[in-house]
Length: 113
Image (cartoon, rainbow, N blue to C red):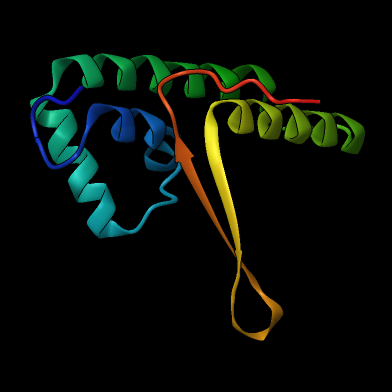
């Protein structure tokens, strides 16, 4: 689904809200995301919720440091969730490096044991 700026689908904008909020994307990408948010009320509403959540987390958890064990469990949980909702392709590249491509899918992909 897309609205507003047809060149930037809503799912991409919603997937990058935290990068936008944390100023972790380059200026060109920020402008693209901002343009979409300016034109899409649905995405702007999601942005407002995420922005409020970020402020609440900073206020309630500011200054506290999570344990390394908790961080590792959280990373594993995020990785598992992303992999369950994505198609991952790993290909060899020059110099022994690997290229990893992650494509989000609209439907859940169940892992086989």
